[in-house]
Length: 87
Image (cartoon, rainbow, N blue to C red):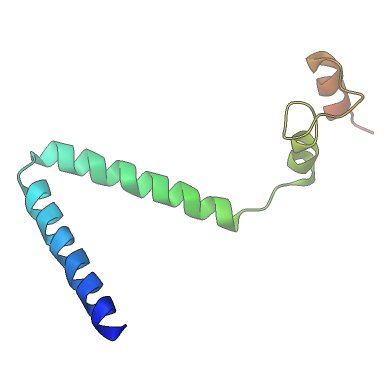
């Protein structure tokens, strides 16, 4: 089992080295854009885990425009009237 883990780690290191050599052959603007896009996606995923929905956002997710339809929301206008009530 230990040998298997070592072999798998070495194979992964070899793949990473090959990838870094391949990326080194690309022009700098392409590498910079790909890196920026990757960081943007990762930052978005991380913020999804550490943010909480407000009560209004939780409510919207339960309407027909969210994840589960509500029986009373027959139209978009009716949902928005209920959503923006001040009482």
